[in-house]
Image 1 (tube, rainbow, N blue to C red):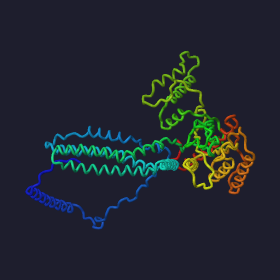
Image 2: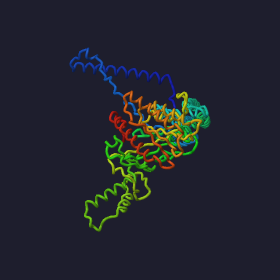
Image 3: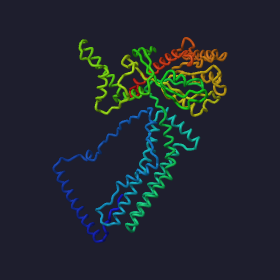
Image 4: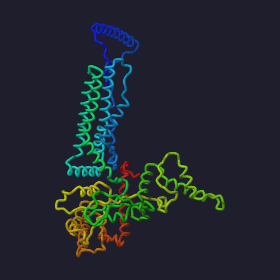
Length: 549
């Protein structure tokens, strides 16, 4: 708001203008009556019932389509700049934008207007990012996928245990601080507008800028920094794609889950011989190939490759329609092969394939598309075009679970594992170390078997495989028999309920160190991933929004 000069008030001018307004109003009413009379004479009479009948409005509202919750919203949270940087940018932009209004000859009024506009703009620049952040968190949390919502709540809970602060408290502090800044700026603007002289108005403006800056840092900086630290942890959570089949590794701490993820996927979790090495979700990827959709359903895997991180990034870019360097190279080689097939084989003017690739890549397509590969040669990898069906799949390493007397009381890491099984389309690999070397405190053989029975009972219909890891270290006497006994009881229970049951109790004896059972495990994992893919395809047919891209 600007302090424009007011016209001096006088009784004479007020009364004369009032009389002129009354006269104009009477003349307008006469003209309206005469024109309406002429119109009614020229047109046929309208029935009173129809004339006074109100127009019917279409009260039917189109149903609002509920936004589909998907993963990745944690990374859509707005990046937060430091409070000091927000302050300096607001001060700089305000100084560059507000200038003296040379049309105002009176120095006092000119200074009042500039001062009021300066404080108003400075306050708006300070409050805008605060308001946007609070609204974004409320919106994203409302439409967040259940898994990521649990991840967010667990991260907030861990932060609360450390320093007693919660996200709602931090956001409320920011909101209240913004309201205090707005109220304070209005008071200073009133003071500036009512200054007795131009010098006094200028001094009020300078004092107001200093007060707003100090209040902003005092009220906002601590809470703002807390939100930034919390958001940094949330943005580091790996994005689990709902359109990609996944296998989650579950088991007690220190049973070898991380070693398995390293052996069969691109994941690189930390591997150490102590409990709770994995303190969050670690995600690895594997590319699976099938000859046809029928092979997917029956589990006939045609090929498997472990993609690099560059391959995973390229796959994401392809889904977004971005043409990468490798795609250009593959297209160039395909075009070159077609040229050789169509032309005669004896032509001496043939072009070398590497030259074709180099020329195409160097030329580019003029769109500034991102290039990922650094060389002009294609490494010999399994091509997606070699098979009818290919799928990027996910292998998830999860924190260890503990056998507890009260299954409803678990720590944040355990709840993260259970949330992945509850809210994500995953198969389950239950990993056990029956050698007795995992530790008696939290991972004894008996505790692992009891935990396995509890988890299986909670997720009875998930694709499932049992793995005895570290088999080279041996098995405690009676552990295999106890496992078979538990599995046999589960088979009988499923048969009573009418579910399909396996012909025999099946588990894999695995030793990553000696390479025993690794290939068998890999084939079994690919089979389960195919089962999950079939389920995802069925879900996509029922709801087009959940279709895989």
